[in-house]
Image 1 (cartoon, rainbow, N blue to C red):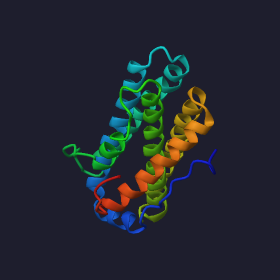
Image 2: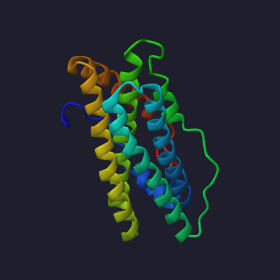
Image 3: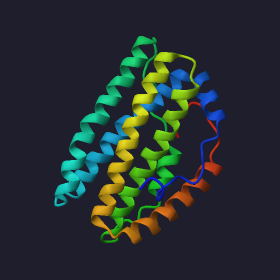
Image 4: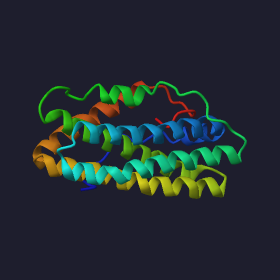
Length: 195
């Protein structure tokens, strides 16, 4: 599956250097990303309670994402940082604009693929932080998040493939990653945001 569903564009390596200079802001943004990931899973469960496999698969992810939120808060506290105000996430909002709302079946497919795409990009960025940050503790901290996001990405893709034909998933994923490539190219490179 990994080879079939790659991201089209790698993150500019300068992003990790910028993030290292904005550690308080990046941790705050990361905390909110974990909170929103938990909320997204809850929303999917609420919208599709008849999809038993989806409900059973995402219920533990809600718990895991909320635990991640708490872990980032604890990391902030250890460093004397505070959770800053939540910022508008242009990356996620524009990805979500691609969801075909109200179209039977297609909305669920798009929601699963948007979640998978966000997890895949987060995984890639956590990998960069785990390799580029000077602090050994933070490198380990982000390595564990990287592994978790990879698992979540795989889960969302498996759910999509469970509910939709592979050809449809593959075709829609290709459209989504091309959109995401253009989106990243249009956004300012900022070290105070995860995306």
